[in-house]
Structures are given as C-alpha cells and as structure tokens.
Length: 303
Image 1 (cartoon, rainbow, N blue to C red):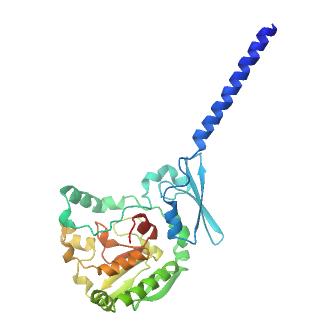
Image 2 (cartoon, helix red, strand yellow; image 1 turned 90 degrees about the horizontal axis):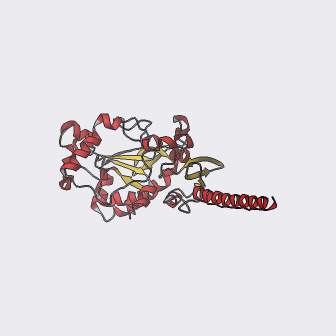
Image 3 (cartoon, rainbow, N blue to C red; image 1 turned 135 degrees about the vertical axis):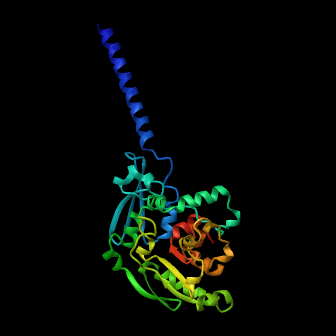
C-alpha cells in the first residue's frame, strides 16, 4: 500500500512539473514579441519630434500598443502595420491603407508604362472605385493636429504669407514653410527657373474643409497641411489628372511630362527636403499639390 502511494506521488509530481514547464513555454510563445519595437516607429519619432511614441507589446492582440502623447494628452493606438488604429478598429485593419507607403524618387514617365500599368491606373482612377477605395486612417493625424472636428481644426489655422501670397495653414507647418520660402528666395538669386516660378505664382492655397475629389476620404487640405501652388494662367495648363481626364477620358494618363506644368526640380527638392511630398509623383498626378508628410520622405530615403 505504501509503495502504491509512493508511486502515485511520483506520478503526480511529474505531471505537475511538466504542466508547469509547458505553461511557461506557452506563455513565452504568446507574449514574447519577435522584435523590440514596431519596425519604422523611429520614422514617426523623427518626423514629429515633439510627439512621444511609447510602445508596449499586447499579447491579446499580438500587436504593439502605441501610447501617443503631447502637451499632457495621450491616445492609445495599435501599430497594425503602420496604420495606428484604435482597438475597436483592429478587426477592420484591411480596410485602411498603411501610413507608410512608397513614394518614388523619380517622376513616373508615361513613356515607360506597360499595358498592365495603364489598365491598373484606369481601374484605380475609376470614380466608383475611388469612392469605395481604402482610405488612410486618420486617428494619429487627428491627434497630432487636433483635427477631429472643423471647430478644433480651425483653432489651429493661421493666416500667413508664403512667397508673397496669402494662405491659411495649420500652425504646425508654419516653420517648415518659412524655411522653404527662405531657401527658395535664396535659390532665386542665381536660378532663373526658381525666380520665374516665384514671379509667376498666382496663389498658394492650403486649408479647405473637404473630402478628396471622387472619394469619401478626408482631404489633407482639411488639416491645413497641404499647399496647392497655382501659376498665372493655370486654367490653360495641364496640372491635374482629373481635369485632363475630362478632356481625354481614355488617354489622360499618357500625357507626356513635357506637356504638364510642374514646378522647377529645385522647388520640388526644397519642399521634399523639409518634409513635403509632391503630387506630381503620383500616377494620378496633381502637379500643383504639396503635402506635409515627413514620415513618407524618411521612409523612402528622399534627399
């Protein structure tokens, strides 16, 4: 009888020991992240140095929870492949585009487009497809710029002069625009193209509370962080894909680069140097458009 009890005790001990080891292994497998922090989170820290991005791995969602903080306020968002989504939107993350995406160093030349490229552009630019297209998640930017509502947004919109033109912009981009203005004015002393660009600039409009054309997605102009630079006589120039589409519905995307108005290369490079991307590098080109996206510039290694 004593021998049986001893044997049972040994068996019970072994079961408990193996169960403990298994539980520990299982716990490690669930909670140990594969990386120290989300890949490319450092790009957002560099892009917005006054914003804090604190990371903690959440084993429940197998993703990183990012506590974003500024001026004593904070919001919790999940990395979700650079989408920065709140917990309740994680299940729908495939409905949103990542905030980090490819932005080319060179201007896409239609002479190099394949038939597949052309069909893809036509499909992407179809009004119905654009209306139902994935939108960029705005949770991070709404927090950074305080733009959840029109009222909160307009409390940060300031009237400034840019290259001699009145414009209304978000206060966070006043500094970068002033630096760009100073550098362009300096370049204009020895660069006739830059000088001519400044002299023939008709307007530089920014803030406008609206959605993207043909889309249900909020325009970055609604944040006051985009700038449309229009030259004198812009109505007679090809500078926006949708206006060209109205004239040539089938072949607008094949319009040669030399037939499109565009800012001088040095102007484009100066904007990019200070965190702006240029719409002329999109296949659905918007050559008047610059928008402040320093994380995209960093992600693509521009400059």
